[in-house]
Length: 290
Image (cartoon, rainbow, N blue to C red):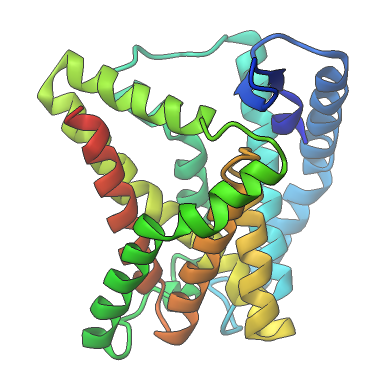
């Protein structure tokens, strides 16, 4: 809600809604900011001691799979870290590092870094439980990934994105895609090395980090408790929402369904990473060579 409160809704001359990210503070944004800080940081004083107690009795982990308890541990750590970072940015304004420095790359992908490192903290000794195993039916997997990619490239917009955008009178321009393309083009303008680093981070690291959170931890926990259908639906819903882009929510939700199917059917998170990485890499390469 904090992220969504920062969006700016503008009516264009054509009578459509254009959604953009706004840096201007609003009253509702301030309310969500204070709520986020309170519910993220204050409970940490109780949560951290409790987690440390658990680590002494259960780690390196007696259970198998991903229970709801461990999924909650993971997302609680992520939310708490998010709140701490917001506080730090209040005292030491963004950005902390120059755009094309090593620190700048780290800072630009801080949410994904958090996703991955916190998963290593909780599941580092049993990554197989969140899907880091060899996929079954590997040859069939490559065919399925290509098929899904062709669908997402040539059909997804025409049958999902455009009709829904027209129904709600949204402009198809996405502030998030403009931001990503701008970062890639800016990196390329500095040097080819910086541009290639940007492509690798968006095309490889981001898929691994996001799949670890959504298909590794969340979908595995939901599937174990509620079954495969609700597990895939739940992880896809959060996957679409967390990107904070109303225009792209429908296609992102459908992409989440495809990623969830690949993770479940082939028994490995690498199946989803392969599709996610292919999609991201080709997209940023198009921006890179513009």
